[in-house]
Length: 258
Image 1 (tube, rainbow, N blue to C red):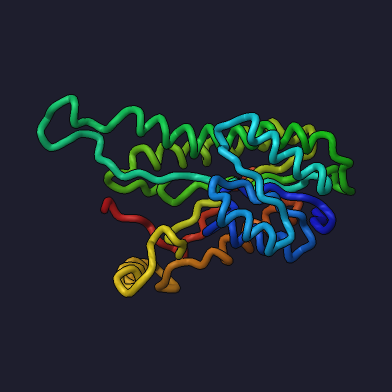
Image 2 (cartoon, helix red, strand yellow):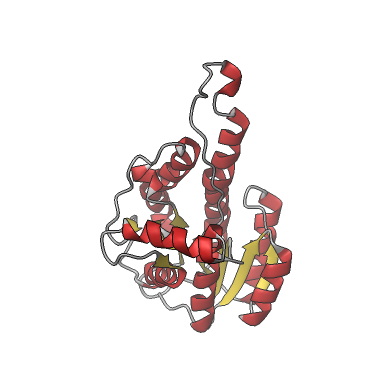
């Protein structure tokens, strides 16, 4: 699928995995909509890549539609990469055996709402817009890449909410691809492992922590780079024969219980 001259939406596009992907897409002549909550960082980055920042809560339908319309105004929307998400770590029950210390149900709902419902919200609305595109020689009108996590398969202690949400993203991949096949829109999913993003912080302590994490990776023994995620995302967008796949990018790691 040819990307030059088209537009793309990258949710969570102001940092980490989304930022790297947005940069690579811009390098290919794509007008990127940086859909994020962080206006200060997002606006500066969008200007840098000659894209457009749109303040976007992925669970807010009106804001998602605003991002889609901004993309369509810049060129046909052929690419969506969903990187927006949140994490949380809490065990299912507390140590005192009291109902009140069990995992907060509202927090569980919030993680599901952002990571799973928000991803699907962008998919359903974005694919609707893509259905109006003129198809290419393969009949393709667009492609979607969603972001799950190795936690979808190797969830650790305390990751009940996060793993549930990311497992849902993996689970929707095949039926989503089947739903969208009649309009010529492909859907794939990436399960990143330990990727070096701002979530780990900065400074000597952060570097030492990342080094310890990297030592547990099969090979190469380091954290992944955001650009490595980005190149895979771009490949899934451009390679018209990859569809309905969920692909781990983790250097062979299998997460232990903790």
